[in-house]
Amino acid sequence: MQRCLEKGSRAQKMALADVIIRHLSALIEDPFGNYLVQNVLKLENTEKSEMIFRVIAKDFVRLSQLKFSSNVIEKCLDSDKIGPQVDALFFGTHENEDITIHRCLGKQAKNKANRVKFLTQRLMLHSFGNYVLQKALLVVNSGLRNQILESIQLQSSSLMSTKHGPKVLQKM
Image (cartoon, rainbow, N blue to C red; front, top):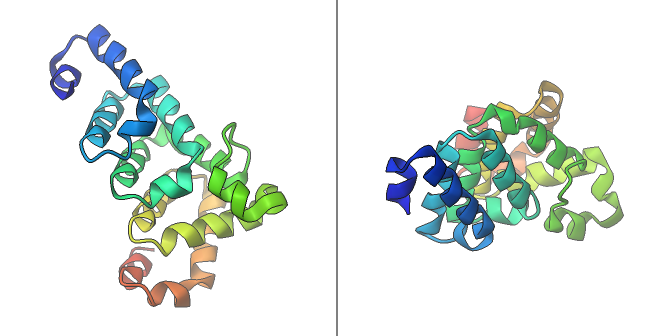
């Protein structure tokens, strides 16, 4: 499959990308399948990238904290065209609500300030999630970026107590 994504005709690549996206939920967490998803993202097809992120958005927090799927999310965030979807996810206006956010915040899930703080805390304190957060900072709008950075600053003492915390703070 990877060979076809690399060497196939444009039509073959797009057809295979559709099949991979249909099986995204299983492939994104797989040690080998995640590379297929990343190769679809390398096609730099905005429609396919947005389709992938819409699926990711439903389970963004959990997937950001898993080794293989966090790599896919980071690759997804390499596209600056994904920025508006990331903004929507952080602000609670994305068409697909993240189940972890909804479960943990309940009625407060639509409160933008609470969402940003919750997402920032969940991602920055996690060994894989912090990389996703760092990539997200590169694609979100400047207002959201400032909110995230402020939230990180307010929680910097918690971050310093983690193994990766000082390195994350240094990059911010």
